[in-house]
Image (cartoon, rainbow, N blue to C red; front, top):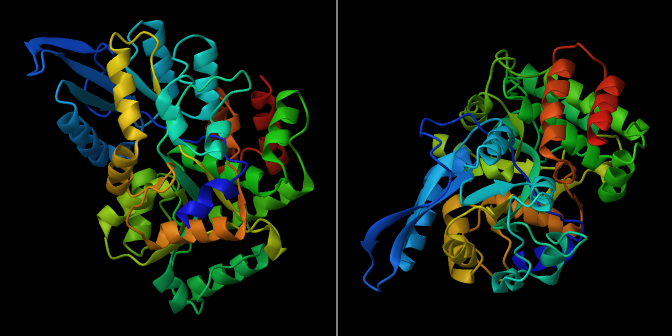
Length: 423
């Protein structure tokens, strides 16, 4: 299935993430530090600073970088992880000339930073050739630049607890809005909370809108270009999709308005809620709560046509090198290793991800198998948020929190996002 994945996902661009509340470690100066001691081979010892937003992957990332250092004894990686407002903090570091050596971003953000000269163009680096033609084409800008390299391919849809659905009489996940509403009623009759929601973390609500946009259009990239040029984002299909969001919000756990991301994962993992919209990146954190939880991932229905149920699948977030890094060659060694068959296998095995490098094999799991089954059947759509910049995605958080708390309607929410997307 992994061999099938890359040629089939033709609309993949590059992915995403969000994040950033400083996690307790000081931000530091951002640029690398050089120790006076020398390694056995006479090379100076270098510490690279990696500023990332994978809070739920932190331990796996630390182990990944440790194994890189074992293969490259003169280079260590100091990991700084943020959990909210990542791009705001990153831009502040750029303004203060304190940019870390390695940064992370969505395609749209890295494009913006690259065009402004803040990160390196990697198009000429040999390791870019490790990707398939399809993936390489999708991480390359119209000008021929490559500003970041992804490690994995990810999916975004509805996690569901198979045991709880079975208790409600369901062996498979619904493919239409009406069927989903019927499932909600069946779960409630069994005393089961249908959905976990984390409204306190606005990015989770924003992702619900992004997924709805992708799931209700036939050409996400063309839609993005139209909206950025001032075109309308409103459509009957997208407005209808808000019925699904209303179903989720109206049948969430009682603490939904104050839950954060981690709380929502725990509710699903502990069987206190039957469903949760999230990305595959959350899988390892869910398992850390209960490694035996019986879950799957399915496409979210936004209409009553079962053929419309498609899973969001995309190249995940990319890693980039600061143009102000004092150790660019060492940073390139890190990215070369991460995108090599050996390094990519280690990183994705530790982080429980689906490799973006062809023929790299990792342990299978039920959720990855679900994602790959959608890919194999061609029932996938690319993500819409990767075609937005960070400012638009941040604006979407506030917009969807206003919608969640009933301050604006569906059409207003869509129009507000379109206005920000066009800026």
